[in-house]
Amino acid sequence: MPPYHVLTKVATNAGIVSFLLAYKKEFEVIFIIIPYHPALWEVREQPLIKALIHLETKIYEMGKSLDVKVIGSFNPNKVNCKKGEFVDLVHPKNKCLIKALN
Image (cartoon, rainbow, N blue to C red; front, side, top):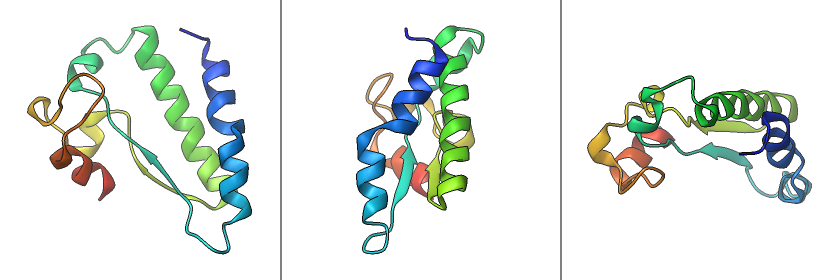
């Protein structure tokens, strides 16, 4: 897995962000973070979880600095998603997505 700073750079400097912000007056730009399965969060000291926590913080900071709304979390507990609300470790079912988007 790439170091945290690489993940952050990819997420915060991607061309898509610049493209979307260029049209901010015409469209509402929202950053949406989709949760991962609760089983992945059982060992919070693993590198993936540390990277997701770091990346989520950076996304929220970027949203604040760009005046862009941020919705959701990589952490399913923050959006009240349960184990049965996932297809697999990285794909939530609609029930979880609705919770994450509210």
